[in-house]
Length: 312
Image 1 (cartoon, rainbow, N blue to C red):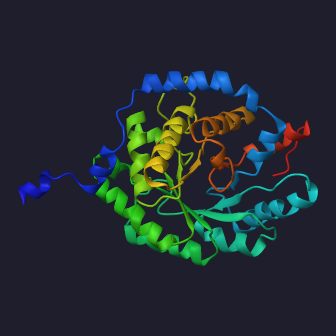
Image 2 (image 1 turned 180 degrees about the vertical axis):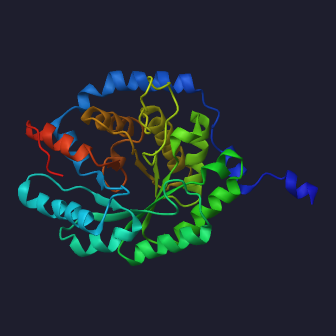
Image 3 (image 1 turned 45 degrees about the vertical axis):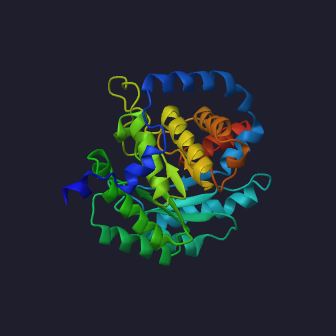
């Protein structure tokens, strides 16, 4: 029995194929250089129009109601008439209990219904509850499911426990896209982010996503009284590097979604630049690149149209 325990698990074996020993300061320096050199050339109207079409328009408030979600969805319906020259958002993201409301209200083509699930945002509940919640969301109309890894399991080295949950939830999702949130702010280091990225992809994630927007990041201390954004360019860079290496080894293309704290148009352009430089043009479509945000839609619209717009 002891001999078996000393054998590396299949998850350790999967990680061993990648370089997960990363230096945070080195990542910061590389990202700072990339942003300085490459972001200005991507600050164009075409890029901003593209980014708008990659938005998962999100409402995840405790105050959400059937009425508010219906109104939220109706704005997406109206968008095509108001702005016929622009492509609509990629998806509407809501809690699972609102999937049916969105499905019954949504009238436009090409906009998916995404639901957070699996005990979002903490992921601290029974796997049976996670499975049931996910299955119910899909039954009610969800095209995509966003879950959070079991961060406590990961940090305590229980990779098997963390990964088997993802495997089980992907089986529930079947052909529906499963987006796996790493909550990079809780992982504390670039090495942990790389490991969590690889394990999530190995377990069936169709997308990996930075954050829930409910957590604090690593890299740099916040100013007094301020909470820094959960998604960071450094975390995005590490995740995109992991996606690239995973694709080179397996041929599987996994999508990338930054979320949480995307407060400005420039923030979005920075994430676009990281995807473009690390993963290349093949990832620059809304099947493989999303932005999780609520405030960015109006900011991008205002920037594109050259006037303040509060449409959503």
